[in-house]
Length: 317
Image (tube, rainbow, N blue to C red):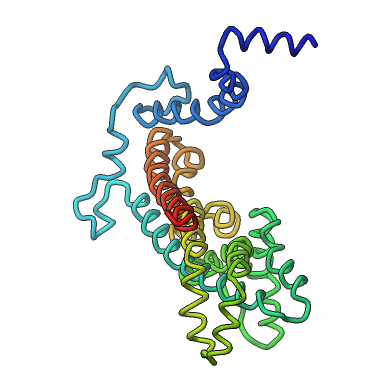
C-alpha cells in the first residue's frame, strides 16, 4: 500500500503522460554511464594530443588526429600515406568483409536449404551447425590455432603422410585464408538459423503447385524460394557485414595481426595504436574508432531501413 500511495502521489505531480519517463529513467542512467559517457570521452581523446591518459592533461588539437590518419600523397599507393598501417588495415578489412560475407551468406544459404529438407537426423544436424555460435570467439581461435600451428594436429597428419609441415599462420596468403575460414566456421550457424526460419515461413502450397506444374528444382529455387527469402537474405547480409567490419577476437588470438600487417584489421589497428605499442597514441586510436563507428552507423541505418521496408511490405502498405 505504501508503494502504491507513493506512485499515486508521483503520478498526480507528474501527470499520466510523464509517468513512463519515471520507469525508464534507471535504464537511461545505466545506458548513459556505459554508452554515452564513453562516447563523449572518446571524442575528447580524438580531439586532443599527447600521451597522457587523463583527459584534463591532454592538449586540445582539434581534427589533427584525423588529418594524420587520412593524409596521403597518393591513395593508390599506401606507402605514401602518413599512417600506412591504418590504410592497410582498412584495405584488409574491406577485402575480408567482401570475401567473408559473400562466402558466409552462400554457405549459410546452402546449409539452410539442406537442413530444411526431410533428412535423417535433421534436428541433430541443425544443432551441430549452430553449436560453434555458442562457443567464445577466443575458444574457437585457440582450438583452430592448436590445429594449424607448426606442431599442430593438421601438420602432424601431413607429416604422417610423408609431407612437409606447412606454415599455415606465418605466411600472408594462408594466414588471411584461415582467418576467413575460422570466422565463417564460428558464425555461420547464426545466419543459417535466420535463413532457415525464413524458409519455414514460405507457404508449402507454392511448392505443391510448382510440383504439379513439374517445375524444375532450379526454377523453384529462383522463382519461389529466393524471392520470398530475400528479406531474410538482406538482413543476414547486413548483419554479417557489421560483424565482419568488427572482426578482432579470432584474428587477435589466431595470428595477432601478422605476419607483418597481412591480417591487421581496423579494430586490431585501434588496439595496437592505443594499447600495444610502446607509445600509447590514444588520440589516433580514438579517431580511428570514431571513423569505424561512423561506418557501423551507416550499416545500421541501412539495416533499419530494410527492416522497415520489409514490415511495410508484409502489411501491404
